[in-house]
Image 1 (cartoon, rainbow, N blue to C red):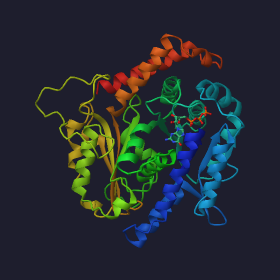
Image 2: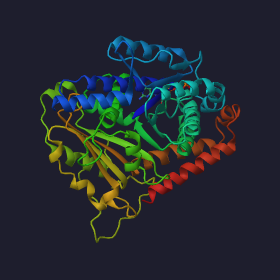
Image 3: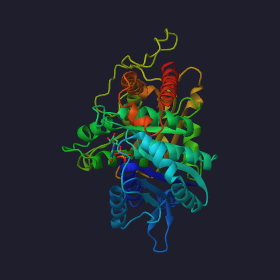
Image 4: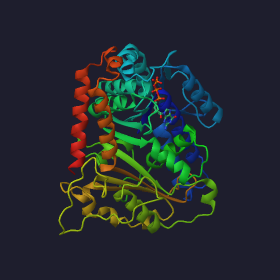
Length: 453
Ligand SMILES: Nc1nc2c(ncn2[C@@H]2O[C@H](COP(=O)(O)OP(=O)(O)OP(=O)(O)O)[C@@H](O)[C@H]2O)c(=O)[nH]1
């Protein structure tokens, strides 16, 4: 089954490009370390998922590119074409002359409805190219105008036009030290709107990825390109083909469906985070060896101690012991100690995946009490290595990981709203104070659901 990617705004287009690039470079990777037959069925599944075939033989990304200004889209199209390995369909993009000026309301209430038909036509055409459509993967920032405002609007349109397809939104959490004064408003509006129409939100924080670039990749002057490559690597490590059940003889046909089934047991809880291990520069990789028990031990501790990377993990954090009093429920504004999960999915790739012991992730103490741990934990695997990593593991988790950040952003936005700062810029484009209040209520509810796990 295929996935149609919808890239929105500067951020969404720049990341979308890196995702296809990472997938394509993994496709051609010669370090697959598996049988020829295995490699061929992996490549076959990858192609069906992300690319359609052109007469020339160059794979064409199953994607629609949307922005309100032309610069990033034209750069993105030409970078892909220059790669020689894959390209975008040059009919499958839409842009105008001027962006949304970081105004969410402008993207959502003006540009969205105005260009709805033309954008949805492009999406429809892309969907029709798929023999079987698994769903949509939208990529956008949370804090801008076009990507986030229009992205929220387009997601609603996707939900209306394709009621039975899955929608996964990849959203980029802005840097904490604000780039734009209204980023907290935009973020609150984006999250609360997506919560109504998306099946799940997969969140990457710019601050966390920036740290990975500095500390694990040893990059000195970090650009968006570096950050985006790490995000793309993480996404590829989950969405490239895998066997999604024990003894399966075929690569999973419905990646988005399987993901939702594994990780979203309740519509109120659909915030997903992603961690991976190992992650390092190519130079260091050449001198490193890894064991599965070591990788899995780190990944589990990253989960429970709420660490975004393998460096600096707090090893003191432990799950509550059975029979001991349950620690007080996390308060969203308290430093989070033990990170309780709703559901986890571990994706293993490479050498000896069959022998990996993941018993530590089945521990009922990791999960909220109303879920059966057997149903809360899933494993996807393939003996095909990912990119240059002989062994690698990724973890997608639905847990309390965003609780504090969400509470923070909602609190800051609320303080600004209470003094009516900048609200007129939104009402000017049809987002009223009532709409803000509804969004605050939606997110307070989400925060409270995660806090009470
Ligand atoms: N990781 C990452 N974040 C980005 C990138 N470009 C922008 N951002 C983040 O996205 C937010 C701004 O959104 P943009 O995508 O630039 O804006 P836009 O959606 O095009 O909206 P307008 O400029 O208002 O039309 C900020 O939080 C930036 O940190 C990128 O290439 N990678």
